[in-house]
Amino acid sequence: MTLRADALRNRERLLDVARQELAGGNVALQLNDIARKAGVGVGTVYRHFPTPQALLEALVGEQLNQLVEIARQALAMADIQAAFTFMLRSTFDMLLCTDGGLSVVMLAIEDADCGTTRAKDELGVLTAELLRRAHEAGVVRRDLTAADVRNLVCGVEHAVRTWPDGDQNRSARYLDVLIQGLRQSG
Image 1: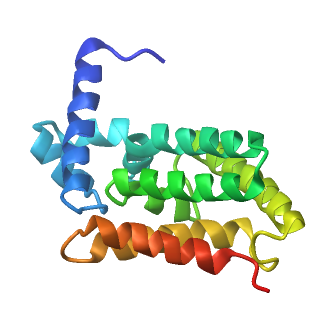
Image 2: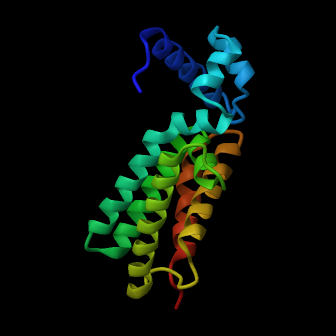
C-alpha cells in the first residue's frame, strides 16, 4: 500500500520523534507522547503504529535484517571460531547502535509485524547452524543454544548501556569476557 504524501510525512515525523525518544533512553515509546511531540493527532500515530512494539519494530527493522545478513556472512566463513566471534562482535555493535531498541525487539516474545517474526526466526536458524558447527569444531561450550547466545549478547549490551560513564573500553572488555566464557574449556 502506497501512502499519500501527507501520510508519509506524518509517518516520517513519528519515526523521527521515536528515534529521539529511543536515543534519550526511552524504549517504552508511549504513543500518545509520540503523537504530541510529533504534532499529530493520536489517531494518526495509531493508524501507522497500532502499538509501541510496532513502532519499535519499524525503527529497528533494518538493523534486524542486517543481523540476518551478518549471520549469513559468518556461515560463509571457513574459520568457525573467527566466524562465531565475528557474529558476536557484529551483533553486539549493532545492538549498541540502536539505543536498546534492537535488543527489546530481539527478546520480545511476541512481535507486532510478521516480517519481524520471519527475520528473528531466520536469525535463530542461522545462529543455530553456526553454533552447531562451532560445537562440532569444539570451539564453544556444547551446552549453548542459539537462544542462550541471543540472551547473553543482549544482556552484555544492557550492562554496558546502563553503566553511567559509557566507557568504550568497558564494552570491549565485557564482550571479551563473554567470548572467553563461551569457549569450550579443557
